[in-house]
Image (cartoon, rainbow, N blue to C red; front, side, top):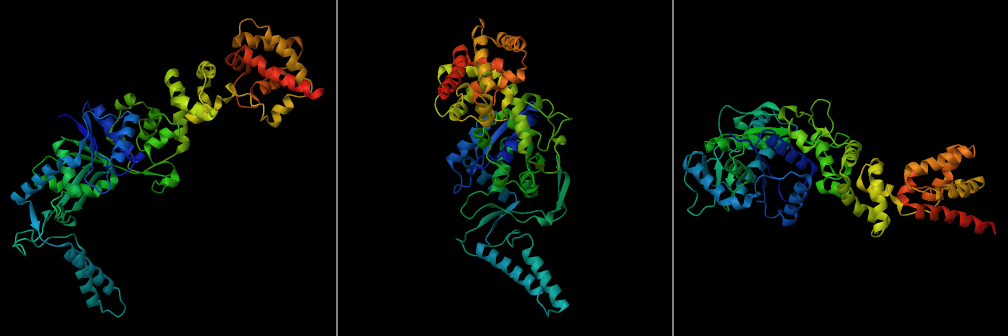
Length: 494
């Protein structure tokens, strides 16, 4: 039997990172078992479903590389099939037409709540209190329709819903891949609605029919759906269909242990793209939120697909840790192909510079990139680290840079300028040798020579070692930046 998993988001908003992790788990389980990973858009809620949300989901899935093996299934397009299955259950006696009106059901609930409240009043005898509590329990219990065993319609044209005839006795048992054996008494399940009075299918019916028709063998979803599973299994049984294997994954919580919300950080998957995270980093991080494989911390989709198992998913909620995500992202930035990383960086570079990059600056950045990959945990952070390549920061010297460009340091800077100007091959090794030779000839430490050169070249902006900085800037730019400060000092002394 081919393993088939599915991810089934509702297009009512962005692709939540919790949803992205669910999609990732389904994708990896299918890959591990040489199966299929499918996508279903559950768009039956027409009032809230939007094309914009559909596009956002597809965009997020594509960015993460979680490509489905077939075209997406839109649940709304299967409505006819859902109705057909509901009618089939009526025909085989597993479902029925129910004429209870919404007003009658609400009155029943209100009466039950009133009885419960009355039982708590002072002055009620124990016998009356017990009687009221029994009445409340009966009225507020899972609904068992008076039409479940047949009966005449109250009027020839009376509106009706189609309800599942819920099991009466025993237990409904789920052998859950994450939660273990979970069971509820059958009496806790109501005669749930399959078709509304307007003939439209409910979520519970649509999900079961779609999963069956798509051949889904394993349902991996959030544990907020566990209660739904006990209501859906009787539908499978009413249609004499095989029940898929269920695995309910704990939610992602914030770092404080509370349910994840906007105050814990971005919830949209693509928001992390917009903050400068790589898709492979977000995948790797989300995978380790609640799943583990030994002590390994970093995974690609390919490496994870070889070892992923449902049994290794933790039963406890995972906690979002943005500092850890930054560490993972920094790893993947360092591992990223230079050409791809440069393409990803360019928009951030231009934002940091405030204007499009010219060819000269891009050549400097291209040369520096292999040595600069460890300078940022996110793309915008890394882009900022290159700012010394387009700006000498002359108008914003910090206190340390101003001190380095004063007194005896300026004379050393002038002498050193002549030393490096004579370097024939403008490479970091030759430039480093020139710096060392100058220090040796003048009995100076590098700590006495380096600060004024660094201040002249970067204006106090963070930068790596001086020799590679000079190579990346090029001979003309290096000497020009030094000359600027020497000339400015000369003008101040006149």
